[in-house]
Length: 112
Image (cartoon, rainbow, N blue to C red; front, side):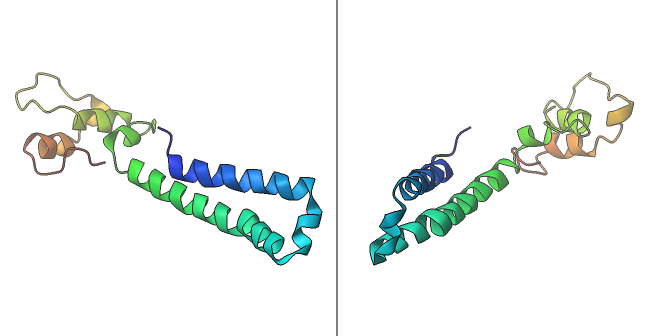
């Protein structure tokens, strides 16, 4: 999933940095210094903040938890919604609290 905000600010910063590298004389004027400040500091910080926010939101989903090899068996047990499921937990999913909480709607659907 590509998030537009951080990519946009990163591309803007890269474009302005290329302009500054191609024509360093631009920075002699006040406007050029402002452009350099935005290209080197403001746009990268905004891209970092927006990217961090997007990844934190993504990390709240069960799908993200399943990407870790340690959590795969535990995470799969969260996806079982049927109370009468015949699937027996393996030794690594012996703790079925997550399944019980999910099946009885004691926790939100898209939570890790």
